[in-house]
Length: 87
Image (cartoon, rainbow, N blue to C red; front, side, top):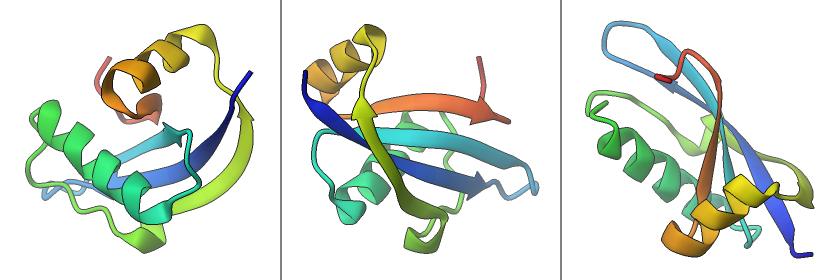
């Protein structure tokens, strides 16, 4: 199996809400992880969230579960929702 790289990410909305999620990539690329985090936030309609490189840091590498692997194949990244994210 392919090793994926997990970036622990926090975003703050204009209302002060914190969203905690992991960006999962096949590349160990912090800039790409940040771009993917921003793209995902836009895709779920959270246009006012602030996420910076300091809030999107490499955490560890692991094999992604099949559901996340499918997302990586289809869009180039996957998001694993942790806290404060919409269902």
